[in-house]
Each structure stands twice: as C-alpha cells, then as structure tokens.
Amino acid sequence: MPRFRIPTTMGVLALCLFFVLPRAFAVQTQPSSGASGQSQQVSQAQPLQQSAQDVKAYTLPPPLYEKAMKYSRAQYILYFAGFAWGVIVLLVILVWRLAPKYRDWAEHATRVRFFQAVIFAPLLLLTAAVLSLPVDIYGHWLSRDYRISVQSWGSWAGDWAKGQILSFILGIILVWILYAIIRHSPRRWWFYFWLAALPILFFAIFLSPVVIDPLFNKFEPLQNTDPQLVTALEQVVHRAGMNIPPDRMFLMKASEKTSAVDAYVTGMGASKRVVVWDTTIQKMTLPETMYVFGHEMGHYVLGHVYKGLVFGALLAFVLLYIGFRGALWTLSRCSSRWGIRSTDDWASLPVLLLWIVILGFLISPASNTFSRYVEHQADQYGLEVTHGLFPDSKQVAAHSFQILGEENLADPDPNPFIKVWLFSHPSLAERVNFALTYDPWSEGKQPEFVKNR
Image 1: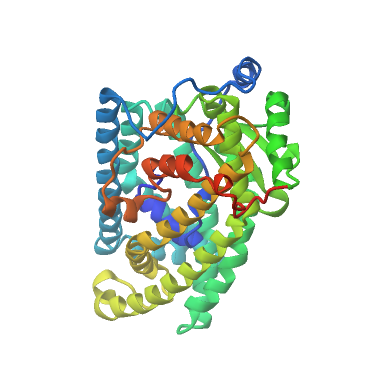
Image 2: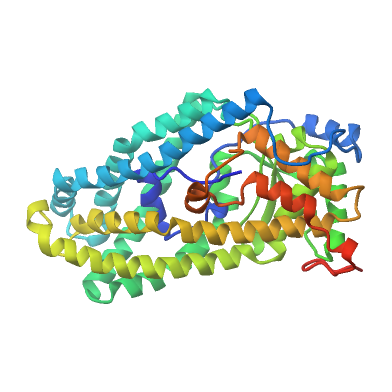
C-alpha cells in the first residue's frame, strides 16, 4: 500500500517543527471505537483457518481495480497540489506582510520574548492552517467518497482542532528556542538549533503513544479485548526469542473512523508498543493477523525506530543548513519588500519555512527510499518469524497483503516515478511477489533475521 502524507501547509509546518519526524511514529488520526467483541469472535471462530483461495499475484476484480486506480490517481494529484498550495500559502503570508503584522502585535503587547512567541507563533500557525483548509477538507471528502474514511465531519473537525492546539503548544516552544538561538549566534544557529531540537524530538516520540495518540484514537490493552489473540501472538514472540510482554500489545479502535486495515509500532523505551487496528482483526484470519504482527514486531526487533530517528536527524541537519543559506539569500533580496527587519525578526519565520518545505519535498525520494527499505525488512522478518507456525505461511502473508490492498484501495499498477517519490512502502504487487518467492528453507539456507532453532 502506498503510504504518503498530503503536504498541506499545516502538515509541512509540523514537519519542519519536528524536523522530519518519521511517518511511522506520527500521530494517527483515523481510529476509534469498537469491535473488541467481534474481534474475539474472529479468533474463536477461525482458530487457524486459512483463506480458501490461493493468491498468485496482487490482483483486483474489474470494478475494484477501476475504483483503486481512480482513488490512487486522485491521491497523487492531491499530494502534488497540496505541496504547491502549501508553498502558495507561505508566499501569501509573506506578500501580504501578515508575519510582520503579527510580530508588531506581539512586540506591542509585551517586551518578554517568550510571551511574544506565545502570541506570534499561534497566529502564524493558525493563519497557515485556515488557508490550508481547502486542501484538508478535500482530502477528507475524497477518503469519505471512496469509503476509506467513515469519520463524520464533526469528528474530523474535532480532530483538526485538537491538532491545531498541539501545533500551537509545540510551535511556541520551538519558535521561541529557534529565535533565542538565532539572536545568540546569527551564523551558526542552524547547527545549535539542530542540536536543541533532537532531545525535543526524542521526548515527543516517547510521549506520543501515551499522551498524543489517545487524544485522537481509542486504545485498549489487547489482553483485555482478545486474550486468545494475545496467546497466538505470544507464539510469534517466542519464535523470535524476544520479550514483548502483553502489556506492550494494544488494540486501536479504528472502525468508527476508517474501513482501512493497518498496524504499527510506536514509541521508544518504556513507551514502545505494537498496535493492531480492530479493522485488521475483523477482516483477517488469525494466521494473517499473526503475520501482520510479525511484520510490526520486525520494526520493534530490528531497531527501525532508532534507525529512523538517526536518518531523520541527518536529513534535518542538511535541511537546516541549506535552509539557513537559502533564507539568508532570500532575505538579502526581499526583506524590505516583505517588512522583515533581519534574520532574528519573528517575521522571518515564513521565509525559513518556505525553504525547508521546498527542500523537504525535493528529498522525499530519499526519505521514502529509506522507508521502503525498512518496510521490506519488516516484510521479510514477518515471513521468517511465522514460518512453521501454521501451514503455508507464504500464502498467509500474500493473502494478508491482498486484503490490505483491497480494503485500502492500493494502486495495483503504480508507475516508477510515483513509487520513488511517494511510496513509503514497496508496492503491493512487489510485496505479494516477495511473500510468494522468499523461501531460504527449501534451499537449505538459514534465514537472515530469525535463525532456525
């Protein structure tokens, strides 16, 4: 399934503030209430039942194929249009001199720099968010039109409002730190801010599953909702020789807001956990759910959270340096026209964001290539860790991908450019083919990650 985010201005502003926070660990906003009782029935009714029809390749029946193609094309157009719209929004803020106006309000209200940030940052972020609403609204309308989302407009608006409040809080802190550093070191601020942002990023990722995610999603310990499933998943954990206690396994009640299926790993250290959506449990057999869990456990075991943080930090280093040089160049030519006094002026923030937004868009192929690499590793780990736990584990994995594609309307035939630029996962066709052909055991070879015991 192609996973990518529509880069609306609020999205890219948050991206800039968090400095390429990996998507796998970002706030999920598609969740909710439940099928815990139904999921338990699935586990009981299908102890180790497998799908009757074998999967030979990722294919869709004609009506669903056409629907998936239309939905995918609309998503691609929205992605690039959303980026263009985000750039336009920042240019509008600059040309209309909105940032200098907000700066003046803040400076007239108080001489204390922190309280100036408390006034300036939310005003700028709210302006960008409101100007970006057409793209956000269309994105939700599109997902509702194709029945990927079943979230009501009222619920969506509530999530949007909560997202803005979070962005205000984080924006105030980061903008205040950024301009304090710029005033202290006008030539090396990009490096010092990068250093200061790293612990904030780690702390945000640590808190996300226990503080931020529950604001949008409903979670329950999987042990409470489906103890039989937990028993089955513990077989996968035991097969890996790992220790993932049941209190690190959670059910996310996604069914009130989406019909899609998914699972993910989130958090770090004491907050790290594996989360399975209730829609996944409803629509997949027990072996298929075990494979999905094995995939997510691969992220857990192979250290993809920490690798993603390191990769994101390196990208942020590059983005900040080039953004620093680009902002200096832009301000030397346009600062008087836009009412910006200097680099350490609050009103210079949209210039820096504009550069980082554009650069972030241009490095999307690099960040998505890294993401596809770790997702492929997780696919392989899932195959290895579930091998021998039930008959024909390759077919089980292939069928789980087939269900993923059908439920999420994954593009059955993406062109190479789209895959390189937008896909954070291998295409469904590639994932199904790998599941059906990966078989070191028949050749007498040891698997790469989960050694035979």
